[in-house]
Length: 418
Image (cartoon, rainbow, N blue to C red):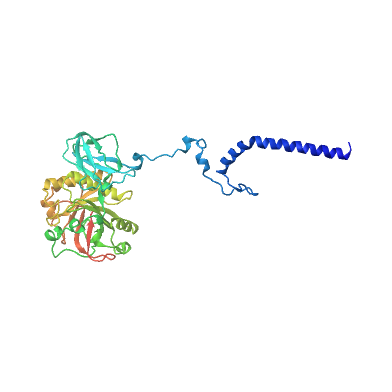
């Protein structure tokens, strides 16, 4: 085949191919237009650059495709009303013929500022002071059904809680007593923490010592000590130790003389740590204003709660005094006051510590049946050179006007005999 014929044949084949392509384009033009319109929503005008980047894309177009997502995996989960509410629960305890009901959140923190209501065997009680605690007294011993009633904004338990009301005080620690212990910032300190002057009024004279005694010069004495509270302020315990003091009885707390609240002494922890660090032996005391054995158990439980894992060398004493006739416990008869002392000491002993009673000669003679307390340590307050008290005692507070290096102002001084 010559050159001219080959050229003509190639031209003919190109014409046929062009014709076929044109026919295909013509036949599929409508279909392509439809696809182009759909694609226009995703990529407009010049869709893909040479570098592969897409410009002017409608990136949300896929949302219009109902089949694009797995509906089960991507369905928006709405927070139910129950999940958005704070979940509450109840803590219920009984000491003697009573129920103390605390409303707490998921962190076991008492919820305050709400007018909660509970039903106790279908009788409804309100948290009138909105402190998260409802106290029900004068109940007959037995089992009770306690339920927190619905309140807006909170999820309450659907089931009732069964609680047992005790018939008598068992002298065992109240595990959740910490909920009832207040800081001084929460109370009227002037009305609640009133110093007693009973020993100074009834049991002091001008012969009292105000200096540090030498235990070797006091018959049967074994060590010299002090007792302190917030009233003594900041203490330099190293200076106290260097001055010859061997032990310290530290106030850990008190019950409010007016409010009846359980209150931690604001200097308790630093005094405890400071005295121990300086090498002094330590004991504790709690100033009572309990008016029943039940409240005495609360006070003893407070001591153990405040002490925590710390250890002490000397007993825990219940400080039994009046506050000038204005205290809630000042008018107790001797029988009730003795029952308070007994309940406190038994509870302390049941917690594994030694227990004792502090009071003045006048009070031991007139306001306490001290013969019923012979199983416990007796700490006597009598400010004279030789006590007139004829009963037995293991420790003697011989002045409230002592002076010790490391403490500004006067301080109580004590001699221990055993």
